[in-house]
Length: 307
Image 1 (spheres, rainbow, N blue to C red):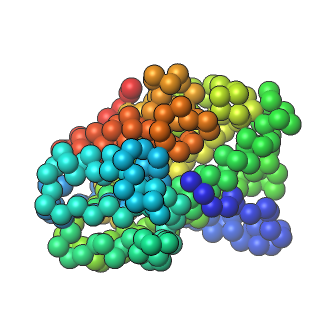
Image 2: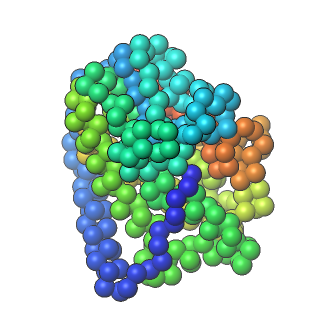
């Protein structure tokens, strides 16, 4: 993914205002944990018109066969695998590498606004977005660059918390209303569609262990970055529940196949891939695992857990 990391700490007054706003958003999100489950649309997930929205984790950069150079989109990404399994009549995959929530409304190179693909006759929509809004790509670059300053410590965590506020947690909270706006727009355009919010797969060891230099982060930053991704996925789950969408857990089914595992066992490639995939992105096995999680959710399961 790309996009900039959250900016350095602003003036104290602005920071207090941002923290207060984020805290209020966080409280609103947490409230859904005790609220009744949101109702879903009447669709069964077996609709004839399926639209896929998302970023590079959806599009599948470098995974054969690439069918859109502008968006680094593969015909073996998880939406394509889901569409083949469901034998849908109309399939539109407009996912695009580098997309943020803004690209739902704005063109991205030759890719038009992604929401333009969603129409009243759309039966099923999958959405995987938010990682670039938080700044996945630049966070990885920043933490890799800082690792040499303290290989056994947590220089990345210290960097992002130096203002007294965890900037990555704040970025996750500030992304919540952006994802909610996307989901409301999907419902407006396709009022009868079933909408699935797809979470992000397990990128780093779930036990917090590291694997330098395969993944060049400092030893104690692995746990910090793993927890940050879990916060992002929790936010997506809660926002989905508040906006009449179904959350698909892809983290649980991919535990044990993160980028620190051996080439034979990993479904996420490290910063120097050994299988066709972008650095720190799912390979073909990872896309297949996410497809199975989506299919299981469509069939009434919970997306799967374990390995």
